[in-house]
Image (cartoon, each protein chain N blue to C red):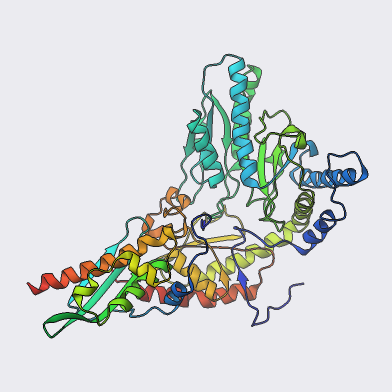
Length: 409
Length: 136
């Protein structure tokens, strides 16, 4: 039951795509594993075995949510690590294979221009090592065209990596469609004993709201993180379909089926399992409610003149509402909103550490001046209608104030 | 999206926030004696400074100064601060104001935001140049 928010303690958090608070049930599930059940899961004694049991349970919870087998779930520290492992691990494995077979070609990867930096930087790293990468363009809605993916596939293509939901504008990519076309292309490859193309998706923003059954999606690798779904920061997972070649990137002990060394972070693994379980259980109602609130927010915000909604009109995740505001700058809006106890985000150059506007907006065709006024709201399961109405009430004044400060050009 | 990671120890000082919340001398001057609009091509911020000059005992003084800025917190704060620093002062003094002086007056700016103070110092310089040009 949602409690009415008292006027005084009104803090409206609308940056859930950036991170979320730990759910009380998740926190409760973690607690026993800090001091009581603190054992190292690799030890044969009862301390170790009860830790091992907790990990196994969490692994099963995640496998169940993805329609995968427990052995196909690897725990990592975050989605960024999962993504690094998926890209670098697969590329290295294939290269080794090809070198053994004395194949002279260079493995080729395909990704999109709107991926999270973890994917883009992993690909850049691989390019520096000599691999070839194609970055697919997107349309003005931020949508990848499956046909472009098909056209980009070459004999040496080994990995296609496309995010499921874009974190900046919410666009849902055609994962099923791409999965199907890769499966089709792989049929003759497999019969002719050539390397199949593997398919990775960054499902970080999708896990909560969209179907993530790995067989239905047709993916071989899937990255996810805990802190976007009410688990703590510092835990993630990578789904690795059985038979997918992967070279371990973090060497050491044999944890995580020898794919990711390091003593397991039991309380955080338990947290992730619990968070996924809760997310799956409440998926339908939460999605419906968040969508409705998001739409209410969009309706209210679009009443402000010279404000445009970005992303796709229909293929859009239910929790993200991203705008470009004419005549006001992103960071300034965030600061004034923060003074009104509202948290949001922006893709303006001033908010990036490198003074570059959002690469996502740029890929979608927005000019730097337009990305300058980027403003993103991302809802979560705890947001209420009152909160949305408060933002709708406050935002026009913030924008008006900043527009009043700007030179007439 | 907001990538403040290793670039800011903490975003803005109290003084900077004060100027963002209550900017000084914000607005237009109808018939300015000097005006300049400068933009930072990197981040897209734009600043316009208006000057009203008066002569006292043969020297030029900044009688009035107003700013308009489209930009981030640091852009607004540096515009506001520079107007405070130069209002009522002789031109010969204020011409030498550096970006560092503006940033220092604000209690410092994160390194990645120093370019905003460059914008403010630049706008002032160009507005004074504009005034001088009109005198000829």
